[in-house]
Length: 406
Ligand SMILES: *Cc1c(COP(=O)(O)O)cnc(C)c1O
Image (tube, rainbow, N blue to C red; front, side, top):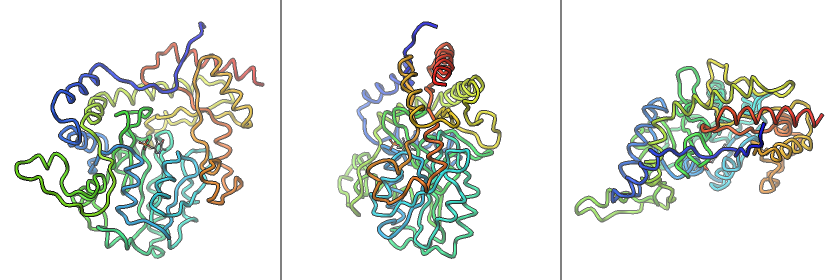
């Protein structure tokens, strides 16, 4: 085949998306306003099982606000996976809590629920499971574990609104899993809180953006939680910019020192436009994933997400495993693919290998599964505008380069 240049994950922007954005630019209202409110309602009713949704500027902000809202801080522990992007750990540190890392399950990229069970102490306030590649974690098992350890839980004494919490909270890092499901339950309705990302490389994009979904919890209504999220997202200000434009209502109060991470109507319009074709986006990603998985030469393989009925992925990543391969050979394969014009990637470098987290004091021996998955894996390009012949080219180059590496 003729040489091709194939990017890893370019954004899928249609003419309708561009029109949606220019319409907002012409409308006279560009920051948080009607587009954001409608985007929240559409996400909730169509994609998050009716859970309430608040949009903001990133998944990172959605997770950090959740930890703040719960009053998590110094002396508290938050359990999460060693196999994730740094954002998941950074938010725990930003609020002053201690990240407790666990390994991934055998033959998977999601955290080991058995290790979560062992890691829970009387300091644990939150667990952050990460739906790697859009494949949902075992939330049912996580809730069983949290309930079985209820006696250890000591409450959320620093929260402004959660005064009667009686168990550890589950906050899903659902950055990858918009549209994923377990049975009939959509991602966004599987945990107490779920944080989604609309960053440029994610399945649905607003360039930068995110959303938090939630339901009523510990006797606190979704309306109260929503208002609290909005306060945290805008300096603790009791009226947003749009509310202040109502006649005679200039005056506001600042209730506490919140953050500044609201979404703009420009971004929301882009998100809404993408949402209209999101089912097609999911279908195409599934098709590409399936083609890769069935075409890979032995012993290369991908987890069989495309044939699972109960747990449905959103196919954010196409991670290929090269069993028994050492990190150096994996990197050689990445270089060979790059020379063939195909940009690949690795998701993710386990947290403990990153300089910023050396001081957590973990050792590589503590995470054998994550390290094995990491050193044997390559993320292949997957994006909706990929043409079939581009994918055939990638598969051909994979076969060639793999054979040459033996
Ligand atoms: C992208 C990503 C995030 C962060 O999302 P932002 O919207 O960029 O804050 C968090 N967790 C995981 C696993 C991600 O891939």
